Amino acid sequence: MKIGIFDSGIGGLSVLHQAMITLPEADYIFYADVDNVPYGEKTREEVRNLVDHAVGFLVGKGCQAIVLACNTATSAAISYLREKYKLPIIGIEPAVKPAVEHIHESGRRVMVVSTPVTAKGEKLKRLIEKYDAMHVVDVVALPRLVRFAQDDDFDSSDVIEYLKCQFAPYNLENYSELVLGCTHFNYFKDSFAKLFPDDLEMVDGNTGVSNNLKNTVIKNGIFTEADSNKKGSVEYYYSDRKMESQAEMEHIRSFMTALKE
Ligand code: DGL
Image 1 (tube, protein in one colour):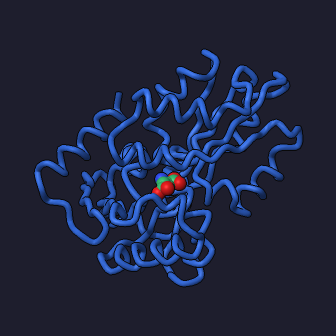
Image 2: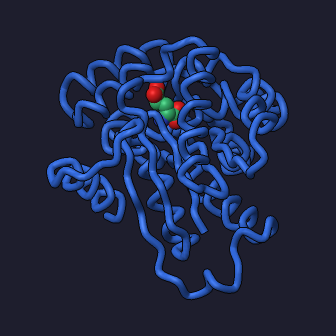
């Protein structure tokens, strides 16, 4: 069973990491579109064309299902892709529902952080309308975090200063839930923790999307008897280039190890 996992960059590794726990039997192809990252500052049409290219590439490699491990790509392209391609395409969306459920009647608020494309997209608006009857959700776009992440900078004083500046209009003491609505933001948990109250809960969509992947491959007959107890594998692509250099593999390994901790 071959599964494609797509992101604009290294953020999708956090989804791959969870998918390998939930569905260890799969052979994964991880595609990071590093030639075109960041997506979050492009137009929706540009994002859709780039994701379309990558999905076509993954289909050409024999993938039987694709995970868009990118909230921005899901927001801009999933409906289009589902019409165009026959295979199951699973998207990721900011985990607004569990975050709103967690706060119950505490009187505190939920902050969703994402890229500008996701923040302005209809999909997120509809999601918030559906679950935020109490009007406790605020959305903040943090585009520069993606650039920091691609430069391996997760907790420098520049990162903290940038976050302080973006959060200046908000009283962070009011928040008990932070929704990580961009897969790149998983690596900034320590920086977020420095700025929000100690009891802040951070939620991402990684477990949800991995469970969804497993259910989908079972339902569609992609997970067959032959896959049971099989040990899966991963191949990595940077845009359309197979990653083979030791240095690049080491770099990826360091992220995967950090995610285990
Ligand atoms: N990691 C992507 C997301 O989840 C987008 C990052 C970017 O390229 O701007 O939204």
